[in-house]
Length: 509
Image 1 (cartoon, one colour):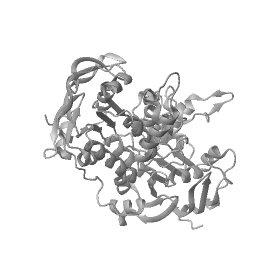
Image 2 (cartoon, one colour):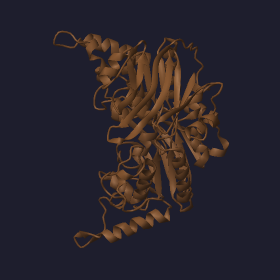
Image 3 (cartoon, helix red, strand yellow):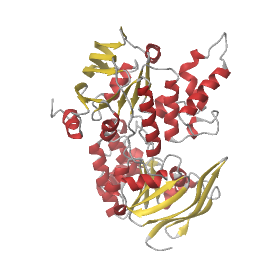
Image 4 (cartoon, one colour):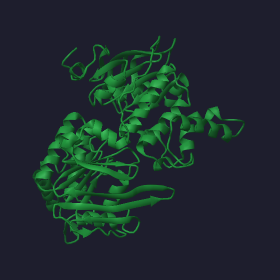
């Protein structure tokens, strides 16, 4: 092996029952580089990283993985073995124990001992040294649940570095971070690179590759289709490699014709359900028209998700304001009441709040709509299957069967299942909270087209997005939130990134 390479994948193939997840994958990663890996959901990125990090041990796949000059032959205790060899992974869903301190999490299961007892002084001293060396700004004694998501991610990185990682894999590291936290992460990665640590960076946010990576490998349909220096790439070129075709526009042009107002919110105020002295909403005003996509923009903590969860009857205690759907004032106190009134919500956290992962696609789609199939003491399973199949077909959910468990689907197809179940309830207003978060570029385009189709059929759509490009590309109007209140509602002639950010930060009024 060339000493410049810390990793080489050689003809790696991985087969699952009925699915060829990886097919003859070959590429290399240089020592000390930040190497991007991108591809649509289902392209094989996660499977390849699971082989590298020991989730799938040697013998469960074909081909060879060469790490630091030797073939990687991970056995039954493969995950721990991978860590001991210097391969660490930071997952999108963080794996910390919230009630423990930073130091306890960093050395969990590997605590330094003094005889039979834990040497707490050494544990915290070693944690402090790691945090300091890599410029991770987190107090070693702080309880993890008191930290923000960005700081929690630093703890995950420190945990990986405590095992003397040579290769650090970061899977969708910025999906829940604010822009300031993203900037901090980029600085941390540069520090890691300066220390000679190789980073593998996986993200659906294509622009991030151009901010931090040296080279990018694109995967498609289980194959590595190209590895190229980032400076020779563009977003358009990456997309073309990922989807295997030219995409002339990222945001499809619909033929929407917004009509009369069907949903109207006036001076909505609500309290934090866990702290009655804290207002999470403090004067929110907006309306949505039939056949319109209203984008909601704002910084993290501005109250966007709290707003839509309150509208859906599942969060804040409303103390003032009116919510009108059509001619009627509604006061949803539960999701069931909201659904009965004509609202549906695609939540931000699809795995935690939108899906039952260990259930089938069929059961997930029909779950909130069982009253449609209820007979005398029984469910009409034929009608349930027919309606669910229609939804799955119309949204092109990629699956061999509706009996497949939702946890086996890619992120994009999981999101389609969430959308399918709510479309089956035929909503008047469809609320979509970050609908393309963690979804690849091809699936994003399909979701955008679906939103256009729904709006053209008269559904009023409220879309929250953390990506200003998405807000500007898909909205008919934009409502901007700042510190729990609506700062302004802008027409698309008035809306641009500078105007939205000035309202979101409170600079403009």
